[in-house]
Image (cartoon, rainbow, N blue to C red):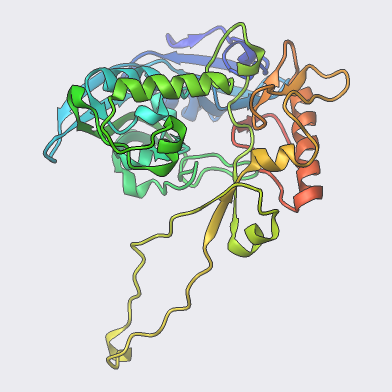
Length: 380
């Protein structure tokens, strides 16, 4: 047995949703070199595999995973100069706690990720699904990632603009029903943050301003923002607490639906919605031999709108705290998007609840909600 191979631990002990049997194999990696060695050992064996960080975005099935799970336990933050005045770069190991990184940045007056305080999981998982909260997303500060592609002998550095970052997605994310566009593992992440010091900064984003209850444009400290965000997340059951079953979840189980404008207009006007920003970098290329001095008039593309899945769940007759008869799985009593394990719930029970919610929302509003966590050994 390789030095980094360990006795497999049931995934229900390593995931916040608390489901999953022990896999066939498990390997722990506490350094980048160990991680590369472990991955290459798994790849050469031909086993099925996946990596596990904080376990906060994984819904694992009741049957043992027939393959290898590589646990990323690396940590460390390196401060680097930024080529931009008034900014600093942080290179962070993939297994480092995301919230510990946010706390580090806030304590030192580095701005750009403070609204994402309290998000569980590891730094390496953050770019995979382009984590975000209250209008702030990692793609705003992400410079590059160091990763290793499946089967490769050496890692490479990939700029952020090559990761296909979108709303809770990237080319590295395993979407329900389909694989990743690029099967690779992140080893480290580099962010570029603004140095504000103790003076803080003016909050301009409307979504974050609403969450913080700001009515003016006076600067606020990063510590104050972090404290308010943590309190808000705790009120929604989105801060892990051993004694609060509402936090035994994978966070938001369903994604907010992104639909064309005409679909959004068909929903009740009370349904909260937010426009999805268009790609402002799109350009039209006209072959020189076809150019006669006038550019063709582009048809204005139909815009996309993000609509509230939580609102649709509650308005399809499923309220907070809802559970099916004799089930140990329920919707959080604090947040309609969170499916929770009330103690000993199986993946089958949580899956049954998820399918029921999907069917009710589809019957009422014609939209099929998509799961946000990575599903392993589970079908919806």
